[in-house]
Length: 106
Image (cartoon, rainbow, N blue to C red; front, side, top):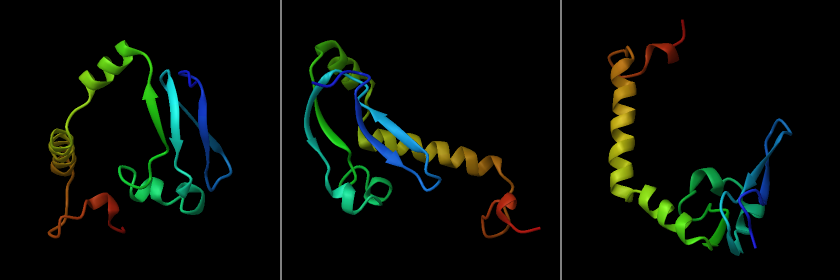
């Protein structure tokens, strides 16, 4: 049984500082992704397909309904993310190739 503060794993960073990943909800741990032990880059490169950490069955019905109510479809998320990125790009001054000026060497 997992509780909100149960540590699922620890991610070790290059600077040797570890980050504890906690469950965040009450549930039953169904599976851990052991492929990350051999290919940790999957966590960043393919988080939604091959880089997932764990499969958890939510036990608390109110938490389940809250999670579902707060989640959005992938297309809605993608649309929201695209708008956010566009706002950031519009707020920056860019050269003729669209490269933000703060990324250019002085």
